[in-house]
Length: 351
Image (tube, rainbow, N blue to C red; front, side, top):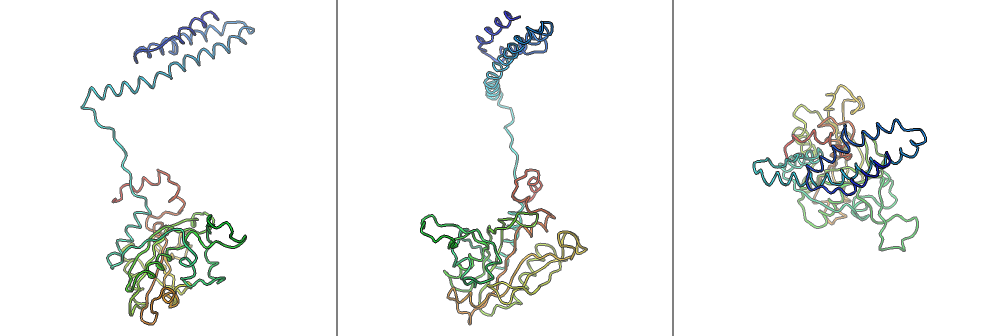
């Protein structure tokens, strides 16, 4: 048996196939169900226990050698055969590819933008790494103000300033809201403003089904003469009816934000349970979707806009929350996990 293995080993090592047919004959001869290796293993059963200790290892190595020789040559002939077939038969269909779809957050973002564009809002963008002035101070967050504790912030250390005092917070941070874009817009322009600010924001929060360390916002700003809270309510009423349908109810609740006064949070009737009560609305029948209010005069003064002549309103909403309600998605972690099974559900949506 040992002499047979030695003979076949030399044959395998010297084997150099010239075609796919030769390689297939090699496979049948050595690796087939009636091949040489199968016969050798059958013969191995009859040897003495002392010989099995020696021949068992040799036989396994021989099998691995045959398999490696076949696998090393298989890919070469498979690709060549396909290329030859394609060059000979020009009637073969082209290689198809799967059509993708927009991410659900992009679908909802686009719909929100289109609704406000019909009201004359234009888009504005800004950086995701912001300084303290645009992210906090200009928005009526003075140093050590307790309102700064409302948002857990990712601060960014400036590598160009290694002399920064230990324990002192950096001047730069990942923006906690797109309100910083409003500040930049008002700093470098003159009223009237009617703009929409979509973008990604970051907050140091524990990740769960209802919260994440990054999410997406759409904020709106309108500054002009004689802008009132009634203008704000009618703008948002139009938005809700366009996005969720005419039967959707809404209500405003008094709230507090440092950059608006008066401030409010807006709820809509739960689109999942239709007001009957469910986990999404915490069995209240209502879901909060945005915060809003009249721009605080201090904010206008900070960007050199005459607060006695101009007034304005601002609002901000999380796209994830809007998408949850629109598509009845109960776990916002799905938006960033890139699970193809989840994303394929939105391929039928208009691109």
